[in-house]
Image: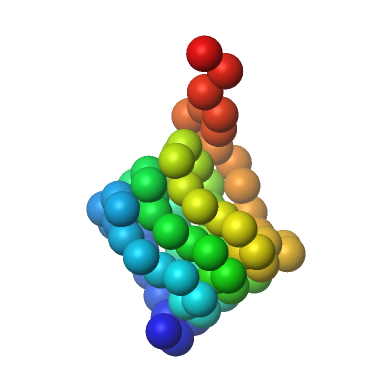
Amino acid sequence: MYLSGINLRGADLRGADLRGANLSHADLTDARLQGANLTETNLTSANLSGVDLDGMDMSKTHLSRATFNPSKKLFNNG
């Protein structure tokens, strides 16, 4: 799935299956990705600011030059 450069700012992608998608340079600012499957997804230079990473499968995900500026907890320590 080729979605390079797409604007998904604030999108509700909870539980989405995005395995192997090309989301390089995508704007995912404040997107809801809880429980999403991002296995082997290309997130090179993607903006993930404000994204809650809880419950996401990011195995083998490409994250070089991706921007992270989380406004929420990244991990549940409880």
